[in-house]
Image 1 (cartoon, rainbow, N blue to C red):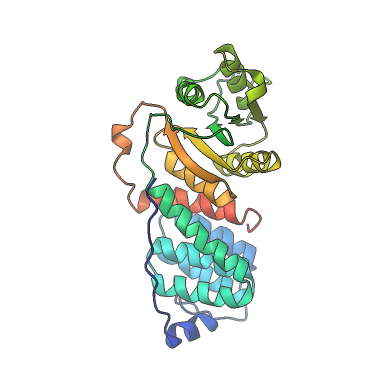
Image 2: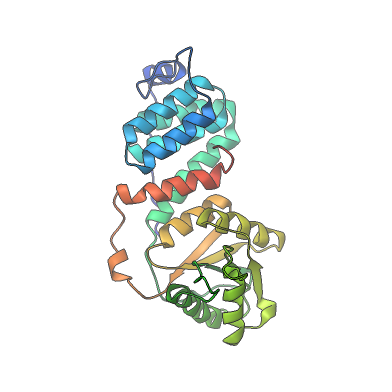
Length: 291
């Protein structure tokens, strides 16, 4: 994986002053500002829709409404990075560092994780890993009768190859969303066992309903068992978002393996517009209760 390096930017006194009064994004503090949670939801919706300037304005208003709330500043910094507003990003991080140095470091870590995720290439070849590294296979929606779609089988076939190359590594299957009473992870575990993987190697996470939850819940399982790193296994068009979410959740991602289908079309780095989902997931993983 290629981790993007971000050059430091100098924060001018004027920029810091503008952020202090809540107007870096063009919004001055007002007496009648909506609640921060409402502004957060509005900002996220604006970014999803591609209205970056409107999203930054909402975040500027959110900071004005809660100038000392670390979550507000962290979100402003992350989305300012997405929008290419480096002055606002560095001003928010600088101010956040004075309020909550740990969260400031975490926000910078999120930006590093996004860089690593964006720089990840789909790769169908297994990695050479140690027994303390897990294989994490992400689920894919089951059919209404509880059987697996072809894409999930593709992911499991990739996981089987990695499992053969690392015969002592544990395997985490992650996915809830039951169909016909069957969670994704249960169907995945059954497929692996049916293809010769010992049940004792498989750890089942069957509550998650999104990539964010895949990352958060699987990371918790691995941490509880002293597992330090993971190879993330999913589809080529999903690998960048998944890698980002797992890094933000606290997993040390040492490899990323994909099913072989449609790899060529996914080799090109994603456009900025295509990165919206990566940034959105990263904010939800970093601050799951902000909305």
